[in-house]
Length: 174
Image (cartoon, rainbow, N blue to C red; front, side, top):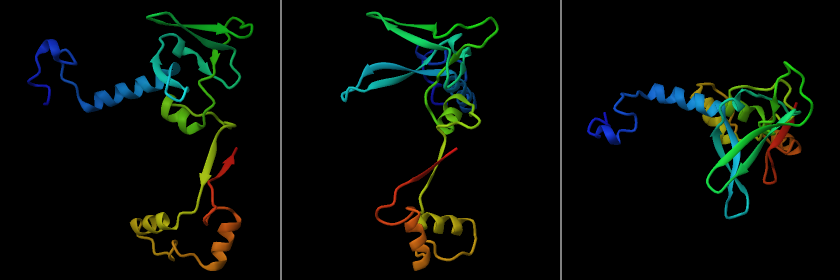
């Protein structure tokens, strides 16, 4: 173990043996409970997002139509967080915060859930013949040469804006 020779007072885990699977579980738990708050501005003037653990506030559910918001206040040395109601919240109603205007990829990776019929969800498509050739070879599927489509196939791909010099990613929204 790389930490075997580290003195107890300098040991990052207080002398306890820690396994990679334990660290993976902790990172998963932390990333699914952390909020992205705004920190200082970077050199372009954009706010830097800081993931932060907010006990009790992390119990609020997500909604694109929230009834509350997180208010950040920075003193000279500390950052204070408050949940502030945006509407009248009845007893037993959940507190709803907007975790961000994100697609389901980000919600799943950052918070561990997806939203059914997320209006911000999309699928990006672009024809990549070389990638399709590699995948078909790896899958041991005999196929035509994707990287050299027939002229009629190239025309259709061009019309769909999926191939060619001016192609862009096509996004399909729910």
